[in-house]
Length: 166
Image (tube, rainbow, N blue to C red; front, top):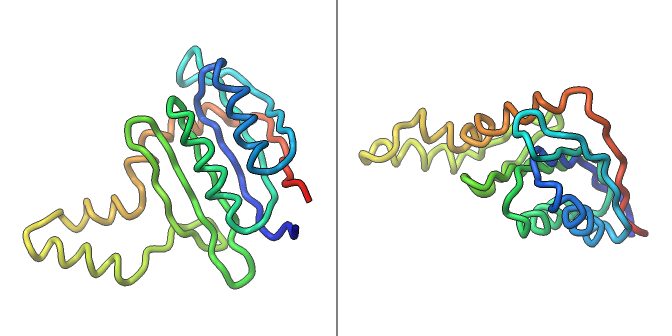
């Protein structure tokens, strides 16, 4: 199987009891045993955090997210880098907000389609959601706001490479 996709996994907070289940879930997707280096999450005492860089085929990012969502009591992000001439993905998950997915460019910036922007403008024109709030939703601002403290708590944390079985 060609390894033509890669990205990152950020487990921002998980109870120690969930850590082996998270490794098993990621390993099941990648087809190889996974061992992450867990460190205490300073932003939420009693929880752990870990980071990894994955490599696999197209669709691996979404499969990792699906597997991790089964462990609902955690916060995480999974990204897929944009390939040549293509787009990447960014998924965020928190227990209070659920999952957010966005298409990203080669720099990791969120790309919002013309049709989604037109729909946001039309909803405001019809008395719906304020355009600023709608754009904030399209960019995943609520997820960023909730995860930001967890991201900074992981500065200088170790990162491990994870590869999909061939």
